[in-house]
Length: 317
Ligand code: HMG
Ligand code: MG
Figure 1 (cartoon, rainbow, N blue to C red):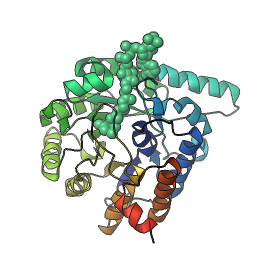
Figure 2: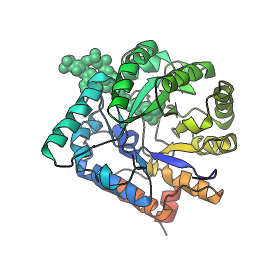
Figure 3: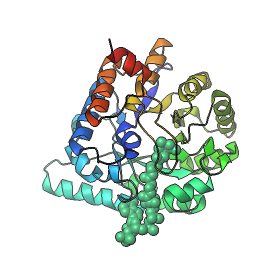
Figure 4: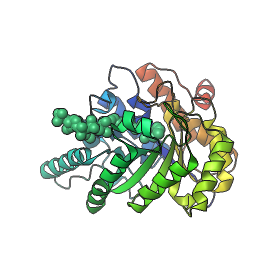
């Protein structure tokens, strides 16, 4: 990929759906969603979570969804289905699922090739989301990451609350740098910087980005994960492109939100990101028309509004 290629990490099937009120989105709808996303050209599609089902009920069917997805074997080496894994208990569930699938299917598996671990840069959100302090979460991760790497998964790291914490206010960039460094040192191939609350803006993002670069963390290992609560996500992403950002997390139809970040709304819409990047001369490998169709299909199917301006505009033509 050239210097004008931006890799999109599509999070609608996980971040997008995890915060929806009941009823649970049917597994068959999730499966069709992933198939449609693959058909747009997206390669990295986050598909679920191995977390407590009582905490995040919308992700409780991840073990049923994975075996129903288009097999990774036939999708080519650049296709990835990351799943969130918070701890060893989550990894054990994934490995058991892989083992039982393999045992009952000739040439079966792997069901996925990537896990994502997550930790907050801030204490109150860490307690709410992970039920543990930042240090406690970090100290549990090397075992999980080592075992995942040993089993052939690549491991992505998330840092949450890189701009503000919903319970504590502004986050110090040094705290984000510290946690990012730890995740990279533990073996994460890249770290996604989560503006969980959507309270970032282009200037604050540039300040954070420069703090990371100053610590010799290469831009090639950093993604921006912006929630769009205050409509600052896309301006922030565009402001980081000249500083080297080339990996962007986004969600079809602007779906998304974290149950432990009250009031925060969806991720930046993939349709809006792809539209803007293409206009500005960047390449994403994603078919915008198909993306728009899929966003309107998904929101209609589950009966929610499409938060992508581009999706609404092109969809209405
Ligand atoms: P815990 O409650 O601290 O776990 O969970 P525990 O070790 O105290 O165990 C208590 C019970 O939970 C036990 O069951 C465990 O087996 C079970 P019991 O023996 O009492 O029957 N348990 C589990 N069950 C299933 N899967 C597991 C698991 N672990 C323990 N992995 C944990 C800690 C983190 C798992 C829990 O607090 C949890 O599930 N939290 C929800 C986290 C979550 O999914 N948040 C949303 C995703 S993160 C996000 O959205 C942010 C992001 O988008 C970036 C951004 O925007 O910033 C990524
Ligand atoms: Mg998120």
